[in-house]
Image (cartoon, rainbow, N blue to C red; front, side, top):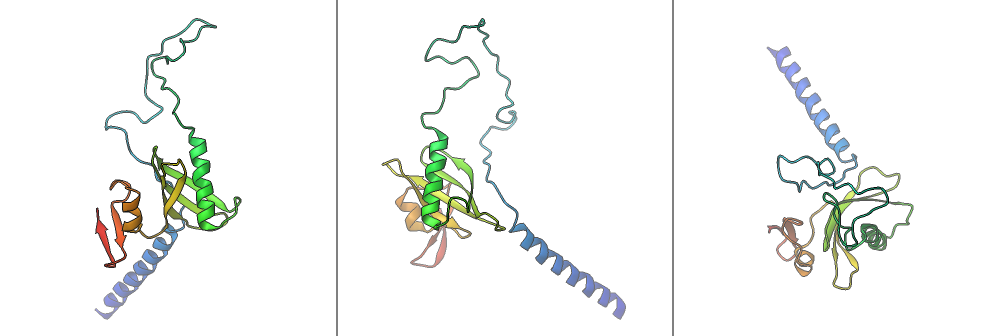
Length: 176
């Protein structure tokens, strides 16, 4: 009976060590937030089938019209937004351009979120940004913890972007 207990202890200790090892390894895996915004049952974006109106060679659709299945270009160039967020993160973190590894997980015309890490370093952190009325992107939060309620409220961050916030006055997490 004693040997059975010893074996159980060994397995328990082995499982604890394995759990600790795997949880530390999970923190070093780079991540990218990818929202699931499509309705269920539809093919993934880019794999939809659209009937295309064919134009004879040399002819193009009239200006201002787009062939079926093609969407007009966005009003703002996402590369400019990405670069503006990159510059805001560089200023916030104090890193050089070569050190910053940026992942944008979700972005709309007012808010953006994603992951950031330092080149050559394992792990990373999340960030949340808001676009001011002036058109400048401001980093609301970066790190492993949750954003503060005063920042979330001052930039009117929707609950689906920040479902919880840290109330510094009470020292508690507030569910929004």
